[in-house]
Length: 138
Image (tube, rainbow, N blue to C red):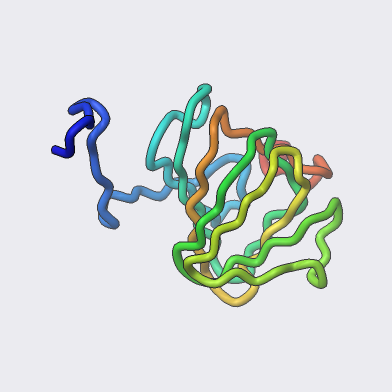
């Protein structure tokens, strides 16, 4: 173990350890995997988000600052209170996107499935700009 590391914080996550589950704030086919932390409590977290081809996350914001890393596929994200395909920016694998808390944005798996890794300081929050887009309200 590297010097300075405490046994209670050392760990690893291999690809086969990633467990995907539905997330109430996402469309039905989207998946979330919590890798580190408890997203319902204050503190650091790392999650992965998987969207299948053609799935959209309508305009929403998170109260916390976030760092997205594109793991696979192309991540299309745009800013604004209305879903506008013209505002989408395509980020290939390896890209890193910094999103300040409160920024209204939207995603689209326009060219196929993508996986992003998201880091932040929780609790994780997600508020849709238009309540009719929120799957939790259906």
